[in-house]
Length: 412
Image 1 (cartoon, one colour):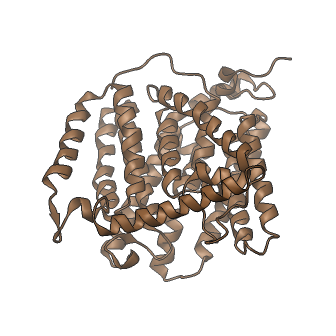
Image 2: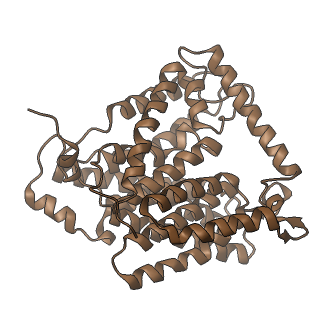
Image 3: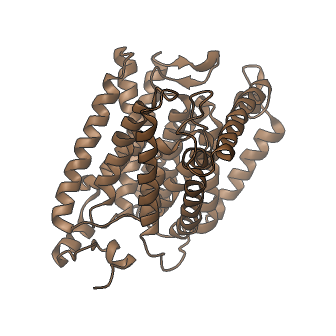
């Protein structure tokens, strides 16, 4: 018996062959009934709804977060049971599976070490926010419809942006670090920034993928909420996580008509430096200025501490967090070396090296949303992400590694 090919997995065939009728049913499944896509969208970009609800009702504890994670776990379980019974089971990429398993062992081990008092929280979060959605989305041997995922990510992202701006205008936001950065009581500026970035990328993908011109024009309306929201967060990580995949997407799709506006915008920012409340726009976005130097210095200190732990413990790693500070390094690659040693470091880099070409190739087809989301969150994980919360990286990494490349690039 030969192992299933990438094409067979795309068609909904994993360790066992699904009936032809079921495979055809998958291809005809409308996006609003694709609960696998909804599960993925909620797991990746749905948490802001719980955090915004907590801000609105004045709940300073984690009750809304717990309820939200519980709902995602239940939905993931139901999706897994239904799809597994109908289509069978497939195994994720073996190297990704090993990486996730080894990191699970690391977290379990660190829960018994006094120097890591928060390891039990990290393990619980990892199980609830990462492993549970991955089980529901990746294990059933069914196809992942790019257009369905695009529609669900667009809807969840756009709704989150609209709700964030409404609550901010009504005074439910707070000032982060005594600055004008937009945040909420249980939602950081970086999380809000990634919500906006996801919505912008999904909107651009909808413009090029959705067949209806009317829907494509209507979809652009989300930019009116997402772009201001990204600006208000003043987060550099989400900004870089937007520019990198968007630039690749423009080149891959030959969307040259977007190059001039992007270049003009960059020139306007860097050379004109318009003032915002008495300071330059670059200073306001913390790209230049005193605040920029301070935050960059702190981040590089964390990087250095993580690297020192990696060098001191190259075989097994030292722990899931930097022992001196108790923080994660805010860089997924450095964290893999610190937490898992050379083996984990090499394993993660090899996974990224294998996935990036697949992502670039996928941008020319209808499954571009998988590539955009992977690149966004993989970039973000190098600035303010951790292994224990990178559900989007793992999810779309496996989806991309299991898919055959598109036939040929198609201009927008």
